[in-house]
Length: 311
Image (cartoon, rainbow, N blue to C red; front, side, top):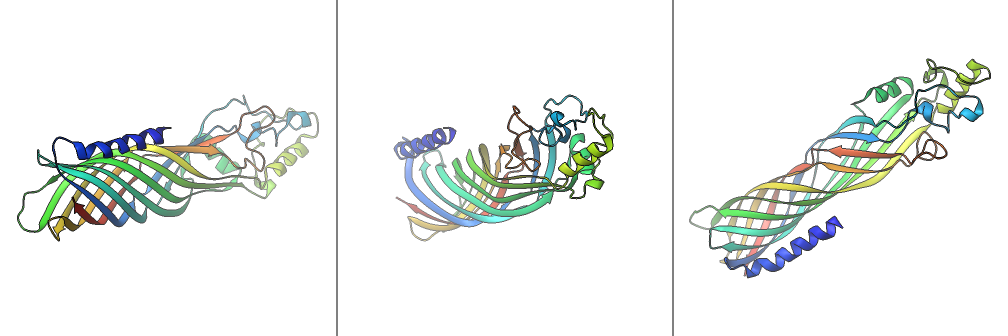
């Protein structure tokens, strides 16, 4: 719904611009260029319990129950970092010059970059640190393609120079409809002898304690948690632009435009595809486990070739 409202608002703006009482000349422009996406530092969380609260692995009905404290949900948090990437910028804009010396423009542009970067989790809370020390041999996450469809309203000021060159500066605000490909693999050690998850917790079973501890570690060994989704969010954005046009005729020009665009926090999430080798929950009657990925670093620099025609 928010995307529909945003698109409808800009379509209305496109209709109203040509009828502005201050309009002097209507123009349309297209662009094609290269963009450089910023490196991404991500903060992640999910709604999972600890491994010993996973009834698929540590079921009290099996007399293999080990105390794990109160199994109430507490947000697990972790961090990661991904290198930047280059991509393509394509766009189209409709604008008017005005009596007060500025141009007003409605712009659509797309920035798509193939990050294709895999990184191991670099930090997090104590629960993540304990898990890394006791169970995990791999905690890799990947950012694949990042695609942002943006709708902006821009204001430009043409610098007063003579000749065929028309330099300008400006900026704008709008929204970016963002898609981020995200994959994750969290894998436990396949050797149960090196897993220590249950070594220091109270045994509540009625069987052979040592055999039950070893059996639990065998159930934990080798299990994986995985996710592979395209995460989506619509975020506010703003940009600064500089450029110069070369007038081919009184109506047509070709030019170069540079932009820096910054978006607000991206936040997207989904359900784990697999959690510790089973369905994404912690047993009968428990909630489905979801994860969320956030970043404040969604931004890009771009340089484009622009063609413009005035009516």
